Image (cartoon, rainbow, N blue to C red):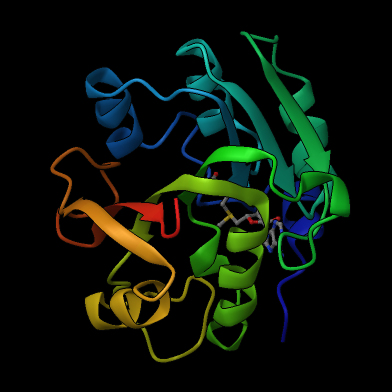
Length: 196
Ligand SMILES: C[S@@+](CC[C@H](N)C(=O)[O-])C[C@H]1O[C@@H](n2cnc3c(N)ncnc32)[C@H](O)[C@@H]1O
């Protein structure tokens, strides 16, 4: 059964929300400067959005759950961040071709594996030509029995899904993680949309 994301935020049952941005993203932003506009799909309460904004990025957080965005909006603004309510699998026309970057963290693992082609199609839609995709993927979820979310994605599945449309810039296992996520369960993938 599909997860009721909004209800989770309403009743504060959001164990994925650690209260601060993803450590692999913090490390990446210390070492790289992101230019242009960025989209964070499935942004939740916006910790990653505000981190990007602190680094000077014009960033939009998108989430399907109004409750998540109400919580995001309650934080003091830090820079050029904004939030949009919507379904990343069916993005509104105004988002098409608008972004230089999409920053993924715990959105792909939140959708059903059968919807990954739709995720890819949305990614292609919202990114500009030559746009870049920075993902912190969940490669392993302990005791995963096919029931999710979260749904992990293997290295082979990442390659199969993205390779035709994206060239890999870099990928690695981050050593900086939330304490509850053992090193090895995440993978950072930095990709560039083909056809620049
Ligand atoms: C596991 S939570 C992660 C939230 C945030 N990235 C974080 O790390 O705190 C997944 C988020 O994706 C959102 N979400 C699920 N399906 C979505 C969709 N189709 N479009 C946009 N957001 C979606 C949920 O509402 C939820 O906020």
